[in-house]
Amino acid sequence: MTKHQCPNCHSPISLSYLLFSKYTTQYRCVKCSALIKWNRRRKLFGMFTTVLPAILIFTFNALIPNLNLLLCGFISVVVATLALWLVPNQIELVDENVGS
Image 1 (tube, rainbow, N blue to C red):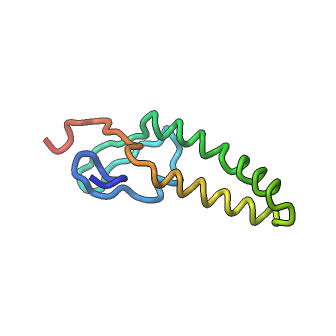
Image 2 (image 1 turned 90 degrees about the vertical axis):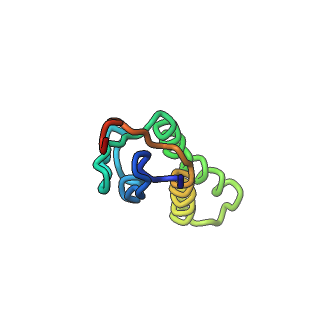
């Protein structure tokens, strides 16, 4: 099983859902209609990646004082997004009786 796919039919989950959805938003699989939601791991990791850009901006400005603040912000947001994308097992199946 790859990182981000339906636990029921193993079809890939939309990238837009993984990156831009709220924590209360539920996703319905296009292939098998299974209802999927974020689990606790995603919620905790989402809170961590919300704070991560601020920490990285502060660190980059302290280490390299002449680095532009906009560049620091861009780098930190890219790092936080990649970290959020690379963590597996962030979803769980809500209704297990779909497709039976």
